[in-house]
Image (cartoon, rainbow, N blue to C red; front, side, top):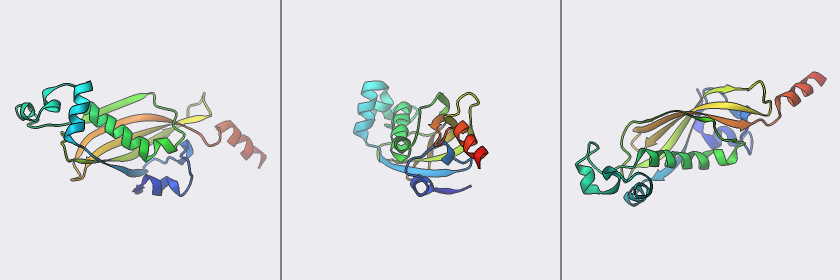
Length: 173
């Protein structure tokens, strides 16, 4: 298994990441997001107004024992880190869904988050030669190396060269 930053892993090979650039076992890390109490409360007030996300005193009396980010806020922060880390410089065509999300530990004010990705599988659809599926596991880690969330999803990436065009080039060689 290779382990590098995404930029080091893919940046030297291509300026834009395509389906062909993903290899099973590739591991990369990116991001450094400082979580603040104000943003936890702001997100919660808008989207998940539960006591453990809104008020320090009320949060102390909940099962989590103190202010923490909503799991959905953690998902949103992970998506921003992933977008900045590689998606915005890729041929991403979106995703058909998320297979699994697990919130493993509370995200607290002062935590610094980063995301570790691992390519689990690549798959070429028979009916669509212009893109491929990449199944990726994303772990959200704190600066203390605690894994606070994990997610597995399949993303779609355009091919650099559609499969039928690549086959034609090989046949002429």
